[in-house]
Image 1: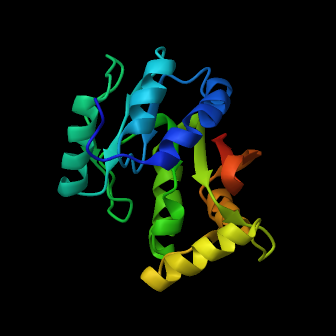
Image 2: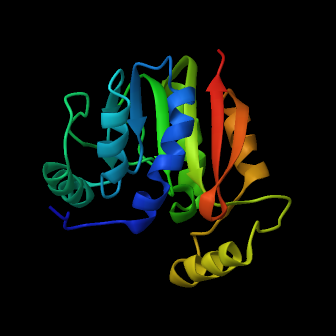
Length: 201
């Protein structure tokens, strides 16, 4: 059955991301997904990684309702929890501690103040040795990795001036301030990256 809300991007990138998550989260028992969107990633990754629990989330009641509707249609698994409301700008978050965090295509649709809050809260709730994975497009040394990413950034800013593809260096600085250490920067299909940090203290 076709889900009502569908993301072709999620469908395209879920397998390449999964291959990385199998290694990154191999010793992780629980993962919080921030900004689960359509729920396609949550449903797929929880089925393919049955040894961990997957906690999807969205920013408000309306978004959680859409997420729940999709997950009720998608093939579910017992290790996939019910979605929760999690607004990255709010303090405290609705999750106190967690071993692993995953988020895809969220930082470029958040205002910079929300990105700052995102990393501050992650630094607070991630357990020692915990891993966080961020998927999406980034700029490096003030340069786009592709023409299509530059066009996408222009479109984002025309829609909302507070949105936009983030500079890797600025994001990594926020992560370092939060006590996170960059472990990997994987080049992914469609000019995206998978950034992986670990909290050591």
